[in-house]
Image (cartoon, rainbow, N blue to C red; front, side, top):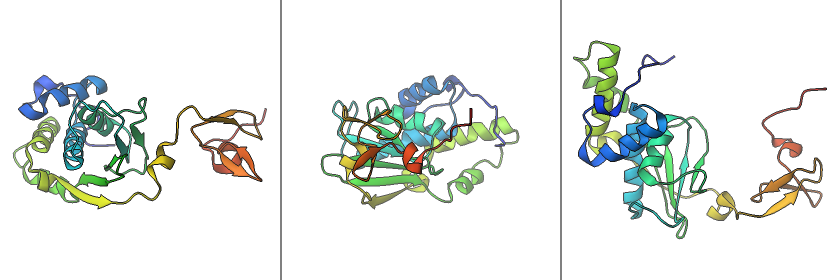
Length: 212
């Protein structure tokens, strides 16, 4: 369990930087409190858009965001970028890392941003006078806002391992699984013996059915 488990902070309890204030309040509203990973998510989101030349609000589905974990970090990224799962502009590929890839779907230019490997130590060095758990938590919230971008985040220019079209697919496409008969949308089926099969029936599912 995290040493900061069950510490809930409202935005008005933390000094917020002017350029981050609205976005952090928006993130906190979605997540019902403010935490350090939301601050990271907002700053990652802002940098990713800047590097690809995007500004809010993004009205077209030109930016694709792939987040490598779930939870509060995603709220910050979503608040900063305006991308979301329901608009099919944000995808979660949960590999347990606090990283985000930003993709220009038109050019397929992509950058990946994550915290610097030593960011926790850098923050700890700034928290020497924070005695209580709550004080340390508040110090993290403050320092993640204030740290220079180069000290906080690392950037990699990357190439996706598959085309954007295959990642996003096309909406409204549907086939019936030749094994279970359930509908499969967005080209997520597998072809076995020239027949469409859902990933569950193809042995790539995330559950098994209990015997009756």
